Image 1 (cartoon, helix red, strand yellow):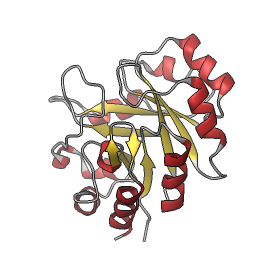
Image 2 (tube, helix red, strand yellow):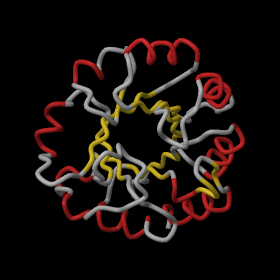
Image 3 (cartoon, helix red, strand yellow):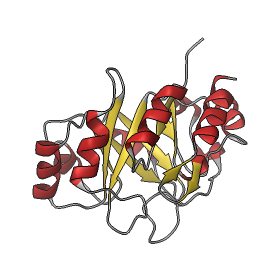
Length: 205
């Protein structure tokens, strides 16, 4: 049976990254978006990324960032994967010599097949809840039935996931991976190792 991969996003401390890895996470996410309470500095990111063991993907999340800033992050921190949450075009996403995933807000009228064609070079599409003016991290779920069954096994499911609903999400959607941030926190930007452990147990279940 295929295993559902897990990314714990919004890591701001080394100990939280290590807790995610200890619980069995496949990837961690570092947010480089100043309005977010989970935003990290390059120095923070480098410390966290350097503490991660082999086979854990370190993902850097950007929202309409300047290309020069992204290059600065990549020069100073060992980043494996980029994640774009803004209005970035395919050519921009492909311009950093790193694999990337494209995040999409599930707003009315979004054509996922068209987006899959546009971002054919992406390693995956991450689907998040739509909230005007908020590029992800809403803490809210969306209608999972909007995801075409033929695409479900290729997508990364995000948006309001927690230990209480992730098993249902996996059963209904059957995504390639799930992405959680607020659902495993003690406070914004501070992870709760017990919540991470419960989340991972629910995923495996």
